[in-house]
Length: 106
Picture 1 (cartoon, rainbow, N blue to C red):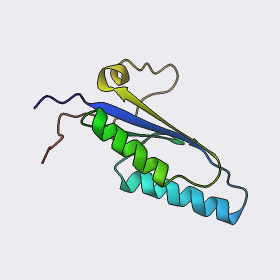
Picture 2: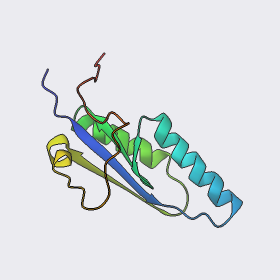
Picture 3: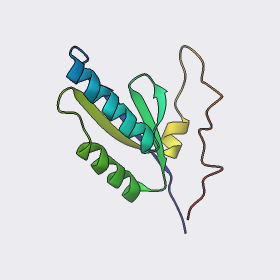
Picture 4: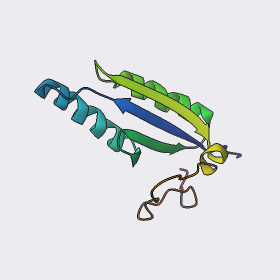
């Protein structure tokens, strides 16, 4: 089978003024982590998927679990596009394995 790996980026800006806002923020963040997303930077999470069909499914699941308030944006990009990302300031964390070389497809 030929797979075209993609990345699904979820970027969000959620209110944290009240205790219910904080609860929704924690719930959404926990959902992302349990769904296999990794934190790229604060409020930006990323997930490696096998192809565009899986990316669409992941996007639909994010929509189903969205918080009631705030801004949540989802972007699907190819692995080739993601690999062209340049770090302008700062440095990349090397303690997180962020590649598809050990991906197991069942």
